[in-house]
Amino acid sequence: METSKRRRSNTRARLLEGAVEVFAERGFHGASVEDICERAGFTRGAFYSNFASKDELVLALFQATTDRLLEQIEALLPELATQPGTLLDAVLGLLDETAPDERQWHLISTEFTLHALRDPEAARALNQQRAMFRDSLTKLVEQIVETSGLTLSVPAERFVRLVIALHEGARSQSLLEPRELPPGELERTFLPMVLEAVSRPSR
Amino acid sequence: METSKRRRSNTRARLLEGAVEVFAERGFHGASVEDICERAGFTRGAFYSNFASKDELVLALFQATTDRLLEQIEALLPELATQPGTLLDAVLGLLDETAPDERQWHLISTEFTLHALRDPEAARALNQQRAMFRDSLTKLVEQIVETSGLTLSVPAERFVRLVIALHEGARSQSLLEPRELPPGELERTFLPMVLEAVSRPSR
DNA sequence: CGAGTAGGATACAGTTCTGTATTGAATACA
DNA sequence: TGTATTCAATACAGAACTGTATCCTACTCG
Image (tube, rainbow over all chains, first blue to last red; front, side):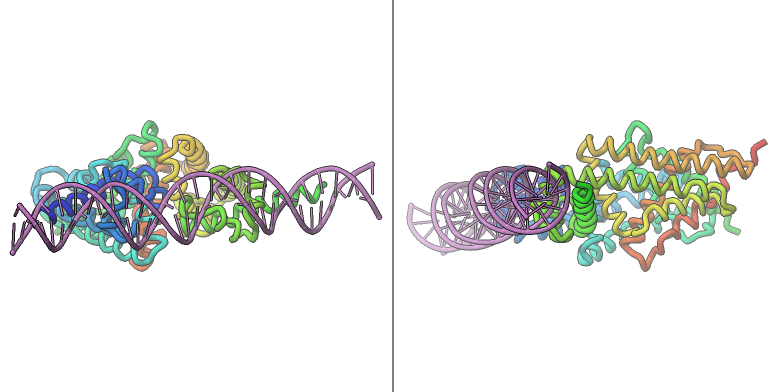
């Protein structure tokens, strides 16, 4: 009875992994249930025994991703906050380390964003995740700024939104034209200027 | 014989319009040929008499959009370059005026970007379009900068890439959470700082 | 005004996908 | 050891979609 639960959750996990790959290759709509099962080494029997529909799998996948992301952040935050590096290293480090496979992550998350822009339900879920992520980053920024005896002339949250927007826009460009724009270049070129402009020594 | 050509190109146009709407609503993959025809007020007969497949329509749609974009830019550039406003007003003005329906444009162009990230052929087409757009913006920036007797400490092209990346990233956030982040706020908050940081009076 | 043609509608065949119902095999448990 | 249960495979029915072939209608042009 114990192995059976483990078995079940194992096939769920494999199906989710397979779904990530296939979604990245063909998109949510373009990926058939059969594609996903084949990739995971099962037939549709396994799928429908674990999920009611592809939509439900998408939801489960998003939830699993969110959970994993939260874990990662909680593991990373303490060391990033206390380590010697600069604020930007910490922030960009968190952004990068939570997205190990840049390309696949970008594809999946863009796909889900698009989905959310069409479906209010998905939008709520996504916005919650993004808010959580942003809050973590904001806390990190506030902490480091304070530690280094500075004050920001804009809310830390706005600064974090800027970093995220720039990071996502730049990543899109880098993935489309890796030769023209190496990953991280825009961020490393311009963010220091912004940071310089918004931070003053706190009196 | 003249009306027949006009008729043909008219139904093509209506099919393309319909496709834009349906693609925005359901995505490239999610939109069936029938959906598109229905939206345009035709049946599939009309479709296959004008396009060989949905892929070909996507291509034609992209091409038509590119052409229209080019026209718009050529119409807008002269006045933006000579008008009194600031550099940022001009740049952001061009970005906005070429995308009248923010939401629909964002959906379609994200959809096509995603498509390009998976298909090298589409990537080439998209990169050409983006390069053309970027070049126009770069020229505009260089011209205005020079007119106002300034010099940039980074290549204008890099600055334009920054603006585009930020604009796209910010738009995504604004569309997801219109209440939290009004459109244009990030750009108006941070771009002036960057511009201040990279521009010096030219000796 | 009448034959020819072009554009679009309709009918049809083939494929792919989804979801359910049934079956088979492995494990749990008495 | 035998029975029950659970999970995944297989078989099947139905829906949706695509693409082609044919038909109909409205112009065109002699």
